[in-house]
Amino acid sequence: MSDVDVDSRALEILQRVFGYESFRGDQHAIVDHVIAGGDALVLMPTGGGKSLCYQVPALARPGTGIVVSPLIALMQDQVDALTELGVRAEFLNSTQDWKVAREVEQAFLAGDLDLLYVAPERLLTDRCLNMLSEGRISLFAIDEAHCVSQWGHDFRPEYLGLSMLHERWPDVPRIALTATATAETRVEIAQRLSLDHAEHFVASFDRPNIRYRIVEKNDVRRQLIELIRTEHAGEAGVVYCLSRSRVEDTAEFLCSQGVNALHYHAGLSPAVRAQNQSRFLREDGIVMVATIAFGMGIDKPDVRFVAHIDLPKSVEGYYQETGRAGRDGLPATAWLAYGLQDVVQQRRMIDESPGDDAYRRRLGQQLDAMLGLCETVTCRRVRLLEYFGQHTGPCGNCDVCLDPPEAWDGTVAAQKVLSAVYRLWKERGQRYGAGHIIDILRGKSNERIKQSSHDQLSVFGIGADLSDQAWRGVLRQLLAQRLLAVDHDGFGTLMLTEDSRAVLKGERQLMLRRESEKAARSSTRVGTRSRAEAIVLPGEAQTRFEALRAWRGDVARSHGVPAYVIFHDATLREIALAEPASLDDLAHISGVGARKLEAYGEDILREVARGA
Image (cartoon, rainbow, N blue to C red; front, side):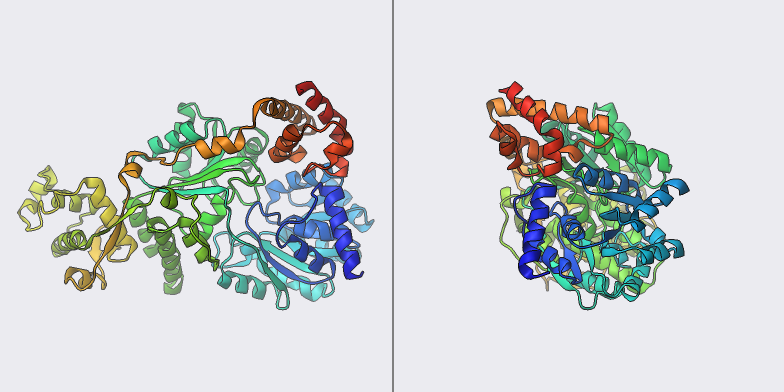
């Protein structure tokens, strides 16, 4: 197939099947490369269109595209979405009985499938490998490829066996795809999957529609419910927590406040997890409270916010999780509340982790990068993208750009804290955490202070000029900069580090971050104006949009699929604005392919005419 044939064939499939007029960014180059038989490693942010990079080549090349995916619970939805487009797709995983699996295998052997989704543990069985050897394969797509990285946050040991695909099918192109990987992780993915000669395609990591906001934790439940009520009432969102108990408590609290919330963590039965995930995907306006066990592969386009009420362990995890907001390109919020106790807890978890020194050192580096993002006094997006090796200017759409914090000389304040820690540390056998240190500095004569005679210390009351919250901010930043450490005693006792000496002696100036007065007064900070302007349509177009959404909901329920599988909100908005009067007009709307035009065109025109 010549270059011209490849180009025209790919574009024809994109327009006819998927309903898009043109490729975005690197998509075209990736598609052409794979159609021509080349291997590829693709890094593209969530919502950037990764799936088209293997779906279009699979339809263009002879044979069946084999998609390796760890997302067993989502395979049905992925197949349903393709079936709606007229693509012959199936899956093989442990949820099927042997009769259904046998029918799928026979369809593959007969050449009746365009795409076949397979879980990695299923793929590596002798039965599956022998079956694949008897059919014709157009390509292998290894989705969520970061799962092969042993340093990653979603490591799947079965992914390590996928290097054999190159040995067994050397002439079949392979494309590995992920939304999250540093340069180091990309090298690891290529090595572990034997993609030695693959071309690397690294798209921009920027998600300009997401507004990043990080606030100091201060009654986090109140802060969370304020965020939801004032900015995202009735909208879909995800709230991430560190522990299962916190997930359940938070979901219960949100429900008590009138929020339609569900919970999800690995301790629930598979049936409950599947039911809650299905409701989140299929129903509007649900808030999912979850651990990091939830979210990978979630294609729901209208998640309007992702909130973290505990500090993520790494920038990779944070980016992956926040990327589940705003897949439709419309404004979305990534909101994180964190405080002093988060830093203490994370440091303690690293110290108590069962790995070797190298493993703990790596975890410490990941946490340091996350803390650097939280404490930055420059654009958060700049800091976030720099982590992945991408350089850009200030975004104008994060809390730091919109409401810059102040940088102040905290050297003297730090010396006061470090002096207090030093004096308490000399009392062997006694354990005093951050709260007690702040009480000493503030000169509070409570019962514990009196019993320990700490009101006699020279540092007692020397910090009365700062509030409790301000001192928590100082302590948090000292921990973040490793000028304080957490003892291994399990009580959160603070101690000095090697770097503390230079500050105590006045040899190092310490600039600290302080929120502006406006930011300190508001826990959720930036208002809702830009979101409302972007999402609410003018006049009658909004009425048509709501009518189209209601029609789509009826169709989705009758088909047993999530509403976005029928049409994305973005497509319905474009229809509502364009007000098409004919099938030809409708065919030019992004997201309306030939199959959907045939299946739903007349119904859509009827709804538009009724709205007019």
